Length: 140
Image (cartoon, rainbow, N blue to C red; front, side, top):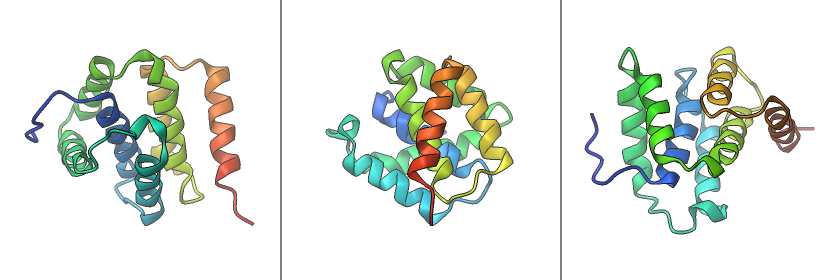
């Protein structure tokens, strides 16, 4: 596995989850990378985040995805290192990445469903988050 020099920070978890959503359909799109980059550069939750960690998180996600139980391992890392108060933030960021290219693919939808389950996101809250992501990513 990737040499992660310190335990995952909450921000690492958020970045890893966004990368996982982008990679879920085996095609990382530029619009998704731009969404991840802009989130890390603009959102207050990433104010003190070391952007050099993004590469390590990418390697970690891809290595986990190469393993049979890699998704379960990723969710285990989330549960161990992401405070519960950031679960909805994580889901919102995941939805934004999934919606970034204007199309939700079946693999992205399945992963979002698993994220909702693993992070115990209330269905009504999830619907509101999803609706907001869709509204932000509509095109003319």
